[in-house]
Image 1 (tube, rainbow, N blue to C red):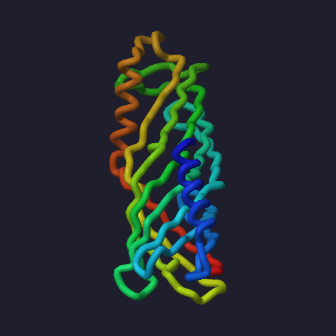
Image 2: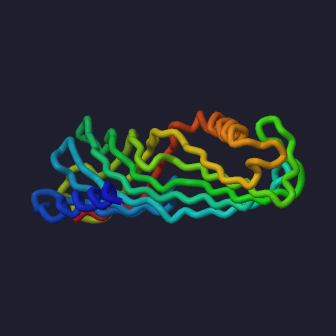
Image 3: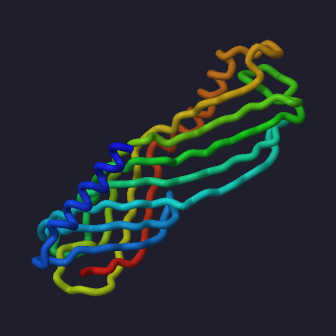
Amino acid sequence: MKKQLAVWATLATLATFGTSAHAQDSYVGVGMPGLLTLGYAYPISSSIGLRGEFAGGLSVNMDGNQEGVNVIGTFKANRLSAYADWFPTSSAFRLVGGLSFNDIRADLNSVGTGTSTINGNTVNMAGETYNVRIKFPDTAAYLGIGYGHQKNDARGLGFYADLGVMIGNFSVDTTTSLVGKQGITQADVDAQNQKIRDSLSGMSLLPSASLGLLYRY
């Protein structure tokens, strides 16, 4: 929470000390992960700008049955980010680097109805719970490219676009009623978690995209 407050405090300071020497942007858009994007951009010079944005509001419910387990799940994505933009040419094209403070997770809550396999052991899941939380890191580096937010004294509406990646590895945490039953140990649960982590290893770069309108004032 302190990190998020620091981002907003920095942006508020920039807005307070902004002058009419050049325009600043407020913007709104849609993208992933996070769905709705709200942000503020402050161009320091013709080649450097600072931005902060919130992207959130995404919440998806899901349910199904897999390997003898009824699964009820929720995926949520919210993030607060601070970016530095570099404009290598006189155009609106920019390179972007920054930090993202995230609440991106999937919670899978399950109750068994049949048989399943835990670390190679077949177990009767009837009445047993197996809950999994898959979570992206709270803080992640961001690298990307974009268009818009360049230093420009022209006021009014415009558009922006961003495409990049957040860098981090998903964590996997499990709570289950199976430990100590049917020969299942915590080591078995940990091994099963590792299998999930291995399946997510190709997602250490989480894509991010946003497109929308800006108002320059």
